[in-house]
Image (cartoon, rainbow, N blue to C red):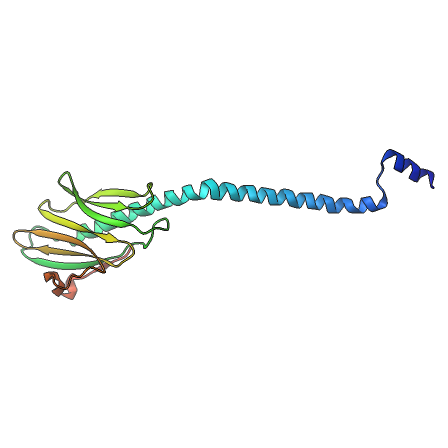
Amino acid sequence: MNPSARVRRVLGGASDADRGLSPVVGKTLELGIGVLFVALLTATFFGGLVPEYRSTVGAELGDRALVAAGDRLETTVPSERFGRVDRRVRVRFPRTIRGDTYRIVAARDSGDPVLRLVHPHPSIGGRLRLTIPHRASISGSWTSSSPSRVIISVTDESLTIRLLDGGADVGTDASASVSARNRSEWSP
């Protein structure tokens, strides 16, 4: 046996076969560290950052949809000087917010007419006070998953505003004979 081989064996030196294996082991360790890093980033984003971002974006989109619906409703209601008006207006919303359907409900809050956004996620919702005549009677709701419309009837004695979904039957309503010039359409 060669004296230098004996020294390597006694001192624990690497053989030629072992030296050929070192780059493979090094690259495998580098690859493992890279995969671990990507897995850690993915868990961080999808475990904490992405759901928080979805809720923030959903709340902002809900606020915008509510304000746009309120604006559309307020501009559709005629001023006090009209004697008799029947008007039907179609209203469109985003179909979902944060992946779920939602409703916009008309109500009165301390005597003021309001629109409320009702969503299954607790961080998404809202309330908007409407600037319409106080004598107005407002009722109904809109669901984001179906075509929505508002029907407004003004007589000398009353102002009625009804929010209806597309599936609701309005054929018996007096406003069904609205002329084409009183119809309008809005999409956000």
